[in-house]
Length: 209
Image 1 (tube, rainbow, N blue to C red):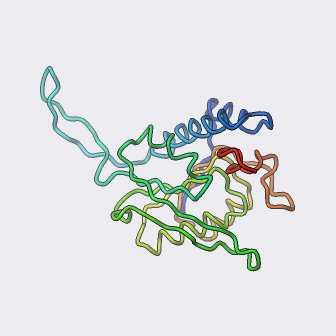
Image 2: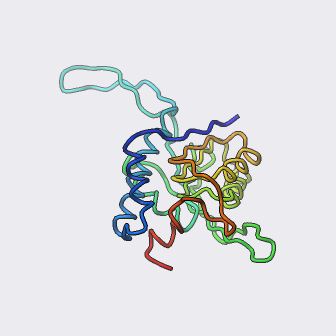
Protein backbone atom coordinates (compact mmCIF):
# COMPACT_ATOMS: atom_id res chain seq x y z
CA UNK A 1 0.00 0.00 0.00
CA UNK A 2 1.39 3.39 -0.99
CA UNK A 3 1.82 5.94 1.73
CA UNK A 4 0.25 9.39 1.95
CA UNK A 5 2.62 11.98 3.40
CA UNK A 6 1.22 15.39 4.37
CA UNK A 7 4.02 17.91 4.81
CA UNK A 8 4.44 19.50 8.24
CA UNK A 9 7.54 21.62 7.60
CA UNK A 10 7.11 25.24 8.75
CA UNK A 11 8.60 26.66 5.53
CA UNK A 12 6.15 24.69 3.39
CA UNK A 13 3.21 25.80 5.54
CA UNK A 14 4.34 29.43 5.35
CA UNK A 15 4.79 29.41 1.57
CA UNK A 16 1.47 27.65 0.94
CA UNK A 17 -0.22 30.31 3.05
CA UNK A 18 1.36 32.95 0.83
CA UNK A 19 0.16 31.45 -2.48
CA UNK A 20 -3.37 31.06 -1.11
CA UNK A 21 -3.69 34.85 -0.85
CA UNK A 22 -5.88 36.38 -3.52
CA UNK A 23 -3.55 39.37 -3.84
CA UNK A 24 -0.36 37.36 -4.52
CA UNK A 25 0.68 38.33 -8.05
CA UNK A 26 1.73 36.06 -10.91
CA UNK A 27 5.50 36.55 -10.52
CA UNK A 28 5.52 35.83 -6.79
CA UNK A 29 3.01 33.00 -7.15
CA UNK A 30 5.09 31.28 -9.83
CA UNK A 31 8.32 31.67 -7.87
CA UNK A 32 6.78 30.37 -4.65
CA UNK A 33 5.23 27.35 -6.39
CA UNK A 34 8.76 26.42 -7.49
CA UNK A 35 10.12 26.86 -3.97
CA UNK A 36 7.38 24.67 -2.48
CA UNK A 37 8.03 21.99 -5.12
CA UNK A 38 11.71 22.03 -4.19
CA UNK A 39 10.93 21.55 -0.49
CA UNK A 40 8.41 18.76 -1.11
CA UNK A 41 10.90 17.11 -3.47
CA UNK A 42 13.46 17.08 -0.65
CA UNK A 43 11.02 15.12 1.53
CA UNK A 44 9.72 12.89 -1.26
CA UNK A 45 13.19 11.67 -2.27
CA UNK A 46 14.10 10.52 1.25
CA UNK A 47 13.60 6.86 0.30
CA UNK A 48 15.79 6.79 -2.82
CA UNK A 49 18.37 4.02 -2.84
CA UNK A 50 22.10 4.71 -2.62
CA UNK A 51 25.19 2.82 -3.72
CA UNK A 52 28.76 3.09 -2.44
CA UNK A 53 31.35 4.56 -4.82
CA UNK A 54 35.11 4.83 -4.36
CA UNK A 55 36.53 8.31 -5.05
CA UNK A 56 39.64 10.34 -4.32
CA UNK A 57 39.46 13.59 -2.38
CA UNK A 58 42.35 16.10 -2.34
CA UNK A 59 43.42 14.34 0.88
CA UNK A 60 42.90 10.62 0.33
CA UNK A 61 40.79 7.86 -1.20
CA UNK A 62 37.40 7.28 0.40
CA UNK A 63 33.97 5.79 -0.16
CA UNK A 64 30.92 7.99 -0.70
CA UNK A 65 27.25 7.31 -1.39
CA UNK A 66 25.52 8.28 -4.62
CA UNK A 67 22.05 7.70 -6.04
CA UNK A 68 21.80 4.12 -7.26
CA UNK A 69 21.07 3.22 -10.88
CA UNK A 70 19.07 5.44 -13.20
CA UNK A 71 18.14 8.83 -11.84
CA UNK A 72 14.68 10.35 -11.63
CA UNK A 73 12.11 11.35 -14.20
CA UNK A 74 9.78 14.29 -13.52
CA UNK A 75 6.45 14.17 -15.35
CA UNK A 76 4.26 17.27 -14.97
CA UNK A 77 0.59 17.09 -15.90
CA UNK A 78 0.08 19.98 -18.33
CA UNK A 79 -0.22 22.74 -17.87
CA UNK A 80 -0.11 23.66 -14.18
CA UNK A 81 2.38 20.90 -13.40
CA UNK A 82 5.01 22.84 -15.35
CA UNK A 83 5.18 25.30 -12.48
CA UNK A 84 6.74 22.63 -10.23
CA UNK A 85 9.44 21.38 -12.62
CA UNK A 86 12.14 24.04 -12.19
CA UNK A 87 12.07 23.73 -8.40
CA UNK A 88 12.57 19.98 -8.66
CA UNK A 89 15.34 20.34 -11.22
CA UNK A 90 17.14 22.66 -8.81
CA UNK A 91 17.30 19.71 -6.41
CA UNK A 92 17.94 17.02 -9.04
CA UNK A 93 19.58 18.57 -12.12
CA UNK A 94 20.18 15.16 -13.74
CA UNK A 95 16.48 14.24 -13.81
CA UNK A 96 14.82 13.84 -17.19
CA UNK A 97 11.48 15.49 -17.85
CA UNK A 98 8.44 14.05 -19.59
CA UNK A 99 5.06 15.68 -20.21
CA UNK A 100 1.48 14.43 -20.10
CA UNK A 101 -1.40 16.53 -21.43
CA UNK A 102 -5.00 15.75 -20.53
CA UNK A 103 -8.33 17.50 -21.00
CA UNK A 104 -11.74 16.64 -19.64
CA UNK A 105 -14.35 15.56 -22.18
CA UNK A 106 -17.32 17.93 -21.67
CA UNK A 107 -19.86 15.13 -22.18
CA UNK A 108 -18.32 12.16 -20.36
CA UNK A 109 -16.26 14.33 -17.94
CA UNK A 110 -13.48 11.74 -18.33
CA UNK A 111 -9.82 12.73 -18.88
CA UNK A 112 -8.65 12.40 -22.49
CA UNK A 113 -4.96 12.30 -23.47
CA UNK A 114 -3.85 14.90 -26.01
CA UNK A 115 -0.08 14.77 -25.46
CA UNK A 116 2.42 12.33 -23.99
CA UNK A 117 6.19 12.54 -24.41
CA UNK A 118 8.37 10.57 -22.00
CA UNK A 119 12.09 9.82 -21.70
CA UNK A 120 12.90 6.63 -23.62
CA UNK A 121 14.16 4.96 -20.44
CA UNK A 122 11.32 6.25 -18.25
CA UNK A 123 10.37 2.68 -17.26
CA UNK A 124 13.80 2.28 -15.64
CA UNK A 125 13.54 5.45 -13.54
CA UNK A 126 11.85 6.60 -10.36
CA UNK A 127 9.01 8.67 -11.81
CA UNK A 128 7.55 11.67 -10.01
CA UNK A 129 4.21 12.84 -11.42
CA UNK A 130 3.59 16.45 -10.41
CA UNK A 131 0.51 18.67 -10.39
CA UNK A 132 -0.09 21.55 -7.95
CA UNK A 133 -3.70 20.56 -7.21
CA UNK A 134 -5.26 17.15 -6.51
CA UNK A 135 -8.98 17.93 -6.72
CA UNK A 136 -11.22 15.13 -8.06
CA UNK A 137 -8.15 13.06 -8.89
CA UNK A 138 -9.30 12.40 -12.45
CA UNK A 139 -6.21 13.79 -14.20
CA UNK A 140 -3.65 12.24 -11.87
CA UNK A 141 -5.38 8.84 -11.92
CA UNK A 142 -5.40 8.90 -15.75
CA UNK A 143 -1.79 10.13 -16.02
CA UNK A 144 -0.47 7.39 -13.74
CA UNK A 145 -2.51 4.78 -15.59
CA UNK A 146 -0.85 5.95 -18.83
CA UNK A 147 2.59 5.65 -17.25
CA UNK A 148 1.87 2.13 -16.03
CA UNK A 149 0.67 1.16 -19.51
CA UNK A 150 4.05 2.33 -20.83
CA UNK A 151 5.93 0.11 -18.39
CA UNK A 152 6.69 2.51 -15.53
CA UNK A 153 6.70 0.78 -12.16
CA UNK A 154 8.28 3.09 -9.59
CA UNK A 155 5.79 5.96 -9.60
CA UNK A 156 5.27 8.68 -7.01
CA UNK A 157 2.84 11.61 -6.99
CA UNK A 158 3.52 15.12 -5.70
CA UNK A 159 1.07 17.97 -5.27
CA UNK A 160 0.88 21.17 -3.27
CA UNK A 161 -2.77 21.11 -2.19
CA UNK A 162 -5.14 18.12 -2.12
CA UNK A 163 -8.80 17.51 -1.38
CA UNK A 164 -9.88 14.35 0.49
CA UNK A 165 -11.88 13.29 -2.59
CA UNK A 166 -8.75 13.33 -4.75
CA UNK A 167 -6.72 11.31 -2.26
CA UNK A 168 -9.51 8.71 -2.05
CA UNK A 169 -9.69 8.42 -5.85
CA UNK A 170 -5.92 7.94 -6.09
CA UNK A 171 -5.85 5.35 -3.30
CA UNK A 172 -8.61 3.38 -5.01
CA UNK A 173 -7.07 3.48 -8.51
CA UNK A 174 -3.37 3.30 -7.60
CA UNK A 175 -2.90 1.88 -4.11
CA UNK A 176 0.79 1.24 -4.87
CA UNK A 177 1.68 4.91 -5.50
CA UNK A 178 3.12 7.08 -2.73
CA UNK A 179 1.62 10.58 -2.47
CA UNK A 180 3.50 13.62 -1.14
CA UNK A 181 1.13 16.49 -0.38
CA UNK A 182 1.90 20.00 0.77
CA UNK A 183 -1.46 20.59 2.47
CA UNK A 184 -4.71 18.66 2.86
CA UNK A 185 -7.73 20.93 2.46
CA UNK A 186 -11.34 20.58 3.55
CA UNK A 187 -13.35 19.53 0.49
CA UNK A 188 -14.39 20.23 -3.10
CA UNK A 189 -17.11 22.76 -3.86
CA UNK A 190 -19.93 22.26 -6.38
CA UNK A 191 -17.65 23.42 -9.22
CA UNK A 192 -14.86 20.97 -8.37
CA UNK A 193 -12.56 23.58 -6.83
CA UNK A 194 -10.65 22.80 -3.65
CA UNK A 195 -11.87 24.68 -0.54
CA UNK A 196 -10.20 26.83 0.73
CA UNK A 197 -7.64 26.11 -2.02
CA UNK A 198 -6.06 28.88 -4.07
CA UNK A 199 -8.20 29.10 -7.19
CA UNK A 200 -6.98 27.85 -10.59
CA UNK A 201 -3.28 27.07 -10.26
CA UNK A 202 -2.65 27.17 -14.01
CA UNK A 203 -4.23 30.60 -14.41
CA UNK A 204 -2.25 31.95 -11.46
CA UNK A 205 1.08 30.50 -12.62
CA UNK A 206 0.75 31.73 -16.19
CA UNK A 207 -1.26 34.90 -15.64
CA UNK A 208 -4.27 33.78 -17.68
CA UNK A 209 -8.00 33.83 -16.91
